[in-house]
Length: 263
Length: 319
Image (cartoon, rainbow over all chains, first blue to last red; front, side):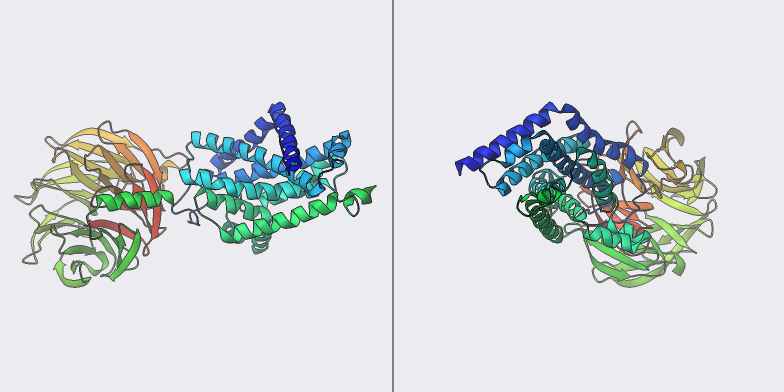
């Protein structure tokens, strides 16, 4: 058991060191949602239209609406960046070293995942603090209750990143991930517009959004930030976590996985 | 959610037992929605005459007076049973009114007739009709009952009526389409809102001179949509809350410096408002979105929006 903890600690420490070392990455992780919040949302202040959807109890400005979506965005990018780092590690060899450790592979991957989630949660709270400084203050209980939601959503998005990293051969392919994973997931979700708004333009788009796991991760965070639990979103997110994790484990299994197939 | 619970629990501490209510007239539904101040839910919906707009309670809250504009009458309702007791003669198209401190005389603005009608609620007779400007709307009475104000939407004037002689003793120009008027400082100061002009004019009552003009500017909203209508003062009269119509915001105005401190987002086309009896909560009627937004007066934050009937117009608190 002790060995498991040591392994977890070592991976956490390595990832933290890497994160601290890459100040640019931290700044980028914060600037991205802040640009959305302070520039994009400002231009669309009135675009949301007026309708009260749970968990909100009164009318809100667009800035308030997109905060949970931007928390999800931070975790989505972070999940993908962790996967990028795995590709890098694999190219540079430290990944091979890690995977030859006597620890079970699922534990290694889980530690890697957990390290990524920890960093993403740190980024999310930094973002929420800046948002609060700009007047977007949430109920205090929401800040606390968002933590478990962020852990679940972070694990889900991180697991997706892990699954993807098992099929990406080179660093350069990350642009593909941006185009085919991050952008569709982000835009086809409730992060920027509520689903009723999507339905106004296209019911099909709304349905795609409704099955997108990112939508449910965002809704889970959104309700948690207002100290409420969204049961269906929690269920969907946990289901997605299970599927992505299974895919990642399968992808990294040297006997059957995609690594072997690529040779 | 937590904030609501907090506000509700504070309210339970502050309010005496026996739930206070906010009564809201729904212009298009011909009903009144009654909101429980503790649960912040609609507990009763009562039918009224056609197009109810201004509503006010008698001093002992045993009677509710309703301007049923399209029925051309002022209805008197028993708030316990919701039954219409009788109608009062009101002149045509009564829109707004004010109850004199004597608890007996109603001063009614007759929008289509350019008159202010004075009705005795006991004898149920019209005791005077005063010619005022075109489309009278806003009504106010000074606390000592000596002065009644009628504002006329098209003439753009506040008409100062001497309640003794029932005649106009002064007229003051205000900005375009004056909608609402209120006295503060024991009748020393009069505020008049102008919907199209986008201002509130503050008068010194003693000599009817203009003291200040308050302007509004809501970030991201075109100035044409910033239209001040109803407004109310906190108990200490240090702050005014001003409904800004289709800008969907309520302005918080410092009543001493006449500066706007904050804009609070509410529903669409916010029109009138009233405080809960303990003045800890403010209820605004949002006409187009058909709901009432509840504002925490201490925190200056909206806490909940409650669906009522179509086109809510007036609001009145009942302890």
